[in-house]
Amino acid sequence: MPYILISCQIRLASGPTTCGDEFSDRELMEYLGAELVHTFGNNFKEYISTDPPRAVLNRLEGRGYKVIAATGVGQTLVWTLYKDDNCEIVDKGKADSIDFQK
Image (cartoon, helix red, strand yellow):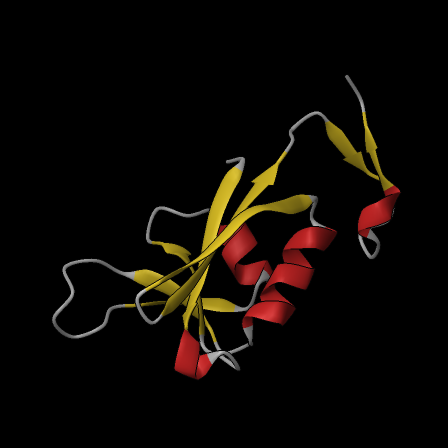
C-alpha cells in the first residue's frame, strides 16, 4: 500500500488525526496508535489517532513514507504520503538514511 492520506481539522491541529479508513493496513494503523472508530451518522469507519498530525507524520517518515502533497480543504488539512516499495530503510529513526534501490 504505497499511498496514505492523513488529515485533521484546522481548529484541532493538536489532534486527533485521521489516519485511514477501515480498509487501511491494520499493522500500520496500530504502529501509528490509531483506533478504528465509527462516528454516529457516518456510513464508514476510520482510523483515528489522538496524536497531533506532526507526530503521525514523523512516524510515517520513519517507515519510509514521504509527503508528496498537502492542502487545505475547507476546515481540514490533508497530507498525501507515498512509500517507494523499492527503498530500503537503513535507520527507521532518520529519513535521510533511506537508501533507494533501483
